Image 1: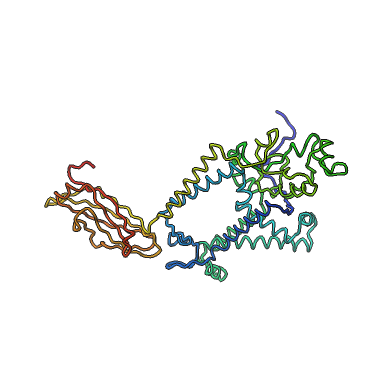
Image 2: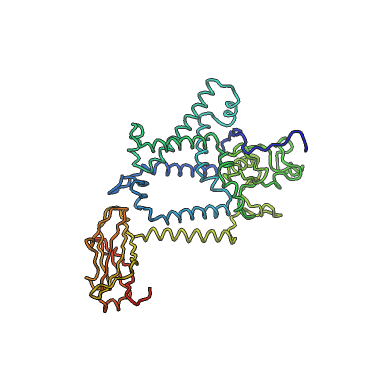
Length: 478
């Protein structure tokens, strides 16, 4: 047994603050555009008016008491759970498809954690200044300046987190009334609890933990490598160009031009460190592809700006594939989609999206289901007539109450007995059950294999739907 000091590996590393530097470039512009669009959708959508007859005038409303989701002109009920399954399937396949093509682009531009962290970093920069000022503020002892700036930053973070939580609750009730009730103390307890939980979680995730959410909490960064191919585009450092024979070196006298550097065997990388300073997860992309990298492309912008300042070619850090970088003469990077897995993801994505769109577009204003009561299968009456019984379920998916007329086709009109429910009125989003009894004489019954039960919304004959049902008689095999 050996004694002495043992190496210890901690499961969770204490967070080291990351002070990111601002950068300009096309990837930064794209990230900002996505952030503005996402925030506009999330924060403004509950306030978008949409006139309804039986619900608040809100474009998107998740009406839990009414058991329905109101999305513009579409009303989604629990019976439409297949749509949710399709959406989840499409989202998963889209994630796999995009990852196979361009790596963790979703993480870098569209993930909620990325969007809110980006906004919180912008607040920090607004209050505390650029990276050197924030680092100086972090190192200095507590005084009035540090108290005001750090306290102001956290106050704005908390305000942004609070409005994030309150906006989420606004999707489940009428937004203007929610705000009035919330600040007057008249909102439901669930509104205060949900807003509080989301305020705290947003503040911690985007303000305090940031990149540690991606590193320790989110599983995607761990299993994303399974979906990578040698042809997958990801953010890479061209080590062959940047290091050359004798590594990278600052741009001092005698090694400022490409000719001077190449003559000495020095790579194109001037070792400025800006690619590390702009990285929101604090990695050095020059050390190779790492699971922490979210492929946001900010290091590409920083490096391209430096290359421009020295009149060096761009692309020392770029989106490229491992296969292309390993080739003797790398070609221009491009998306490689001609692989069996990528094509399969694409086909599944197109098929499921098409089916979902078709299902939504062709959905009627009601659903019906007719089940034959099979206990007993049929009854022979004293006069020889044969009776079958059926249960009719009608679900009203219209935005208003609707009356339905039930009739039969293929049998005599007086053969169907619905009791007192020849017409049935069903509330919006609800279902109704009707028991139907069909009685046929032995002669007619022997000639009747099937007939149709027709359900027609009152005043809307064009929306009538027929359901073919079986009629059983003695001696007929079920």
